[in-house]
Length: 522
Image 1 (tube, rainbow, N blue to C red):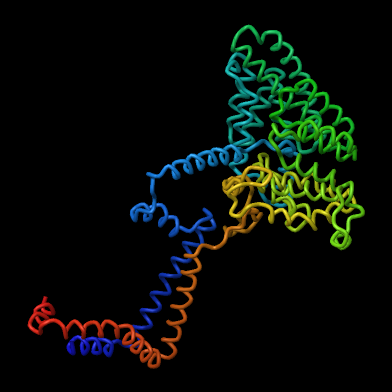
Image 2 (image 1 turned 60 degrees about the vertical axis):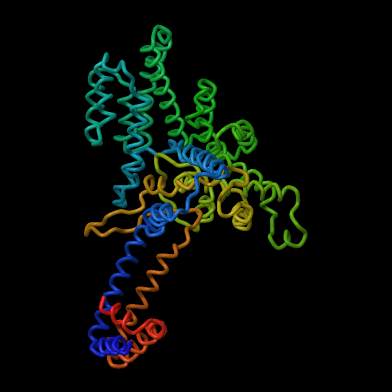
């Protein structure tokens, strides 16, 4: 026993201050590298790498999952249902009010040098164009065959050149659409090209309408011509809205919805709502909401927040939080607050943009419902309508945060809607231009994606941060005061091994000396 203790003390005496500096410095370096990796992984994937590995791989090995109980079977079925619901809610939709690439997005790029659209967003648009504007019979017409290849082309200049080549052969509606979207540098030029496309598109639509029942090929061609015609008329209405002819735009949108009532997937009613709000025709806005704010129809930020705006409009001009706290909320004020809570639960990102607590960027061509991309698209076009209603933003400012007190936490279930999907952050980071590169290859923040609910820092990030700071402090103190820290280290190790020494003494007193001698030799 005394030999073991003396060898330990001899070992501690041989350790120099340089050893302690190297030990603490290496520990600080390793924990710092772990901290950097953990932070990067958390920022990218929203979870701790160590925690994920522990739950995914170590917990099953330790027997932490019991698959035998029926309760777990039922809960797994419930989880599967909720996962299916989350997948359906994380579907990416075409932005009903998307801007023109040539006349708006490209002009922004020329002025600021920033790319407002991500590759993922533009790739989704290319898929939409191929779905809406092409069909299997395009190879029968040379102009359509060229456009079929043009929609698949990634290079914008190659697409524009192909559209001009198609128009040289014959009038082609989809070629005019492409030039209006990407080559026209003003809305006036785009409108002119869309009117040219309208003449050709209407002729193709009438011809295919007469032949649609003659076979599957003609039916597919008629479906394509219908999509082309609806797209052209809608974009012409949007041109009129942007050029200040709002009443004309409302008439065109109403006529389009009457002519094609089954094409609700295009969400033309959202264009109509925005135009009616610009005219301050709130009675017609309410009529449109009565038709589309139905429990059987998919919701959107435009539907929910427009309904909240109309309710707020009735009370916002006289609303005072001090007076409301004294006398309580009236029935109309309660309805307005409930409508705001409903809208905020559907998309909690919108209020910060409406209240200008977060800066706006150009909306993407695709949005994720209930996500940051939808919030940007809504606020970009509807902020002016909220400002026009006196006191509406004040009422929103006073009441929107109260929504989160009614939503269960953690978000296992919703209050008025399904639980908030967990996939929105990942999809929004793909849709929104969160970063850009400058000339010196440094990454600068363009837009900080809004995340809900806010993720708390995992335990292992806090632990590694504390460990890194502690070991770095020890390394610094050891370097500055080597002799004093050496004394402290020896005292700490002696105290640490004191229980072991006590146990060894007890074992030696119990076991025979000969047996203990043989064990120590082993």
